[in-house]
Image (cartoon, rainbow, N blue to C red):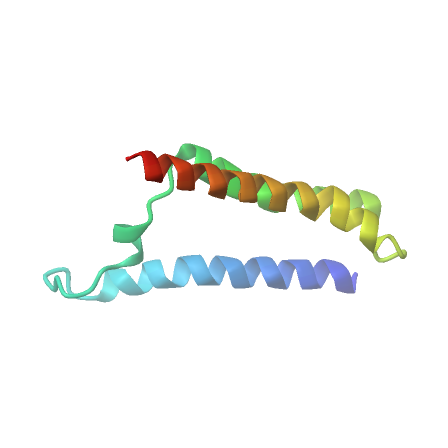
Length: 102
């Protein structure tokens, strides 16, 4: 069960990184225009949100079915982490080409 707790800790840290700045910008004065908040720079659309959630759920599901703690780390990395990293790399490359056209 220690592996499960480590995964939950990583998820909690990631959520803290994304939620905490949003909560802190609400407390600041709305009239100050000198700073740019997280919401002003990056607002993910529906497909991006779907990709982020899928990137979290896919490795978690594969983690529970493959049980990599039984000396199955390399197949787990290829099946769970590999497709996620490859998909994000392809999306990053295509977004670069699309921005270059504009």
